[in-house]
Length: 386
Image 1 (cartoon, one colour):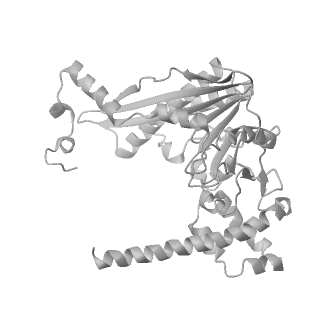
Image 2: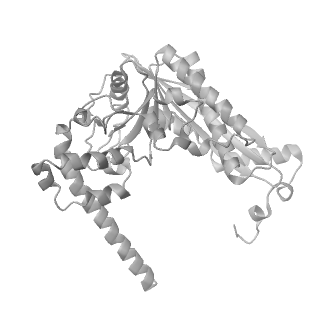
Image 3: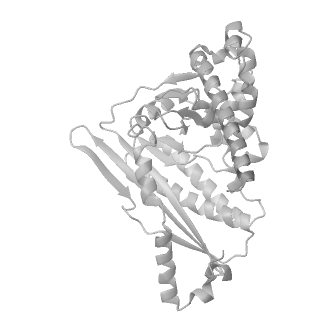
């Protein structure tokens, strides 16, 4: 192997060891400190936080008698010479926890639904085509979630992903794709209104969050906490400013959040306020009704970012009520703390490449077209190139 590659890898190993060492030392200090942090003493920093505790332990609830739905969507996009095909699928898995008869599971619309096929004949730039595909999947998931609210009496609905669209999925107002975004925004508003009216707690489960909201808050909070001589002495030699610059919330919380423990909750709108371009007039009134916290559900897995549509009437109570059910749904594996309804929905929502190819083969059989007619040249390179 080339020595220059070994040199680069050795430097990378050193950097990884530095990160892990600093994170472990930082986590050791925060593990001692977290229970004594009173957020109410720092109103300028914690204005959007409705509780004084930095973290708190969640007590698991008995699931007997509860109905909990898990919802996920799948997406595959196939590119051809004259069109694109967007394949989407949304599915809900509803768990009924009976007090005596045990677990009963329903599926909506059915256990293995066929994908929806959307042809895209428009000539769109790559980024707008990506937005359209993502919006199609969101629409499929939202319609399934609304249908579950209409057809099933559920206590808790767990959605795989955020309860709010990502800023990159919002096209420019003049884009052809903007009409699809407006459709999705209307579905979001319909979902929020219906969930609040039916008193069903709507929760978004984000597995791999890249958010830095808590990292940012700690950056503002720590200089004040370190005025305490004892705390300052404990943090001696820990380059916490450097660590905060390179860390995301989940990575940092992994160092000091215990299993069954959650962080303080904050409003989704505070994340949008960090970048005014992401604040949408369409849904801005709902952004302050969605609350965010992080919960560690498994000892050897990263904490989950959890979004709860909690409203303004006792939001902390609704958050803790939801988490007390999510926690026992997620502790089956030490290394993978995802709620079981989400795992089941995810497995059924995925559209495999084999399944997508069967659909394409069927299209060709019905249309009489061939791969040479449909596929781009690079997709049919007989020499194995991409």
